[in-house]
Structures are given as C-alpha cells and as structure tokens.
Image 1 (cartoon, rainbow, N blue to C red):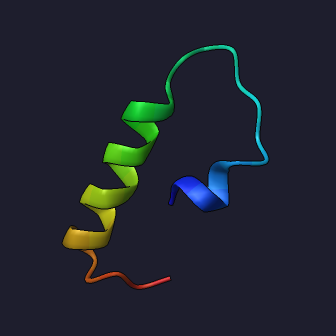
Image 2 (cartoon, rainbow, N blue to C red):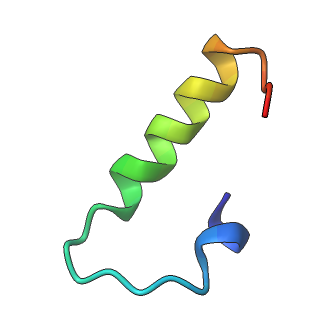
Length: 33
C-alpha cells in the first residue's frame, strides 16, 4: 500500500487514515480489486 502511494504528495496528513481504510477494505472485500 505504502509503495503504491509513495509517488503521491499530499499535504493534508491523511496518509495513515488512507492506509487504514485500504487495509479495512481489503479485509471486508476479501482483497478484491
């Protein structure tokens, strides 16, 4: 997840929440793309 986001620059500081949301979605949806 972090590797995929590494090229994106955001000044809002929401990265930890974005990572948590992606991890939660992966668990909920079984990791489907």
